[in-house]
Length: 158
Image (cartoon, rainbow, N blue to C red):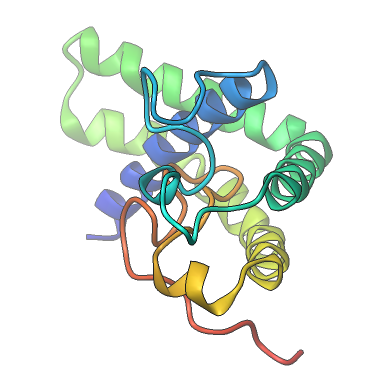
């Protein structure tokens, strides 16, 4: 079960990195040719993020990505090695062993991801959080709420 979660986390990281790259380069406008920007599912509701909120979220994500570029690049390389091994017909155990090498990196990034998540939650209104308009977190595909899981609770006091 732990290995499966690691594999899913690693795949999520790659997807998020691709998404972050697309957002940094403009990406498709919300509602056209994709899920749109942060909180894509609520992009056309009254609870959608304002342009100011989107800019703030983008800044937080970019700062995280810049601060952790080496770790994120290492995780991408590990994912690529696992994909190559899988395509070459390696056993599931061999692919899993490759994926497992990214665990320490993911664990090291977890506190900073959580901090960014809390900062993003502080930018949102309670209605946006309840509607699932949670922007993707750095290194995680879909974030939490908007595309895969319940919305977070209110930000912690500390």
